[in-house]
Image (cartoon, rainbow, N blue to C red; front, side, top):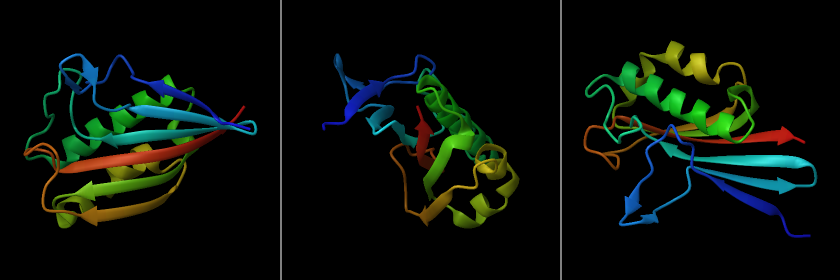
Length: 139
């Protein structure tokens, strides 16, 4: 049995393109045996127009990333409470750790498994954080 796959590009999010070609899917939904597995691409603090929100402000960037993930999940028929795993990439772990309440605002309901890694830089020079998420929903 082949899994059904659906690619979603939520209208509220910036879509990276090269010419007319979309570079990647923001959300991939895979249906297997009555369960929808939702994979959310790494979300950065970009607004709909592609601008960095909260330059130099980790708290504001966490909020934008959280809202972007929420938008992705809603487009796939899921909620933040359906998240089972997150991977977080930050450029300054100590600064990130000061804002645990912001992380809990978005991921506290599900208390998903998570990995956090400090890296030298992200795809945008002003980005301080990127989070990808996996969620499961029963049909």
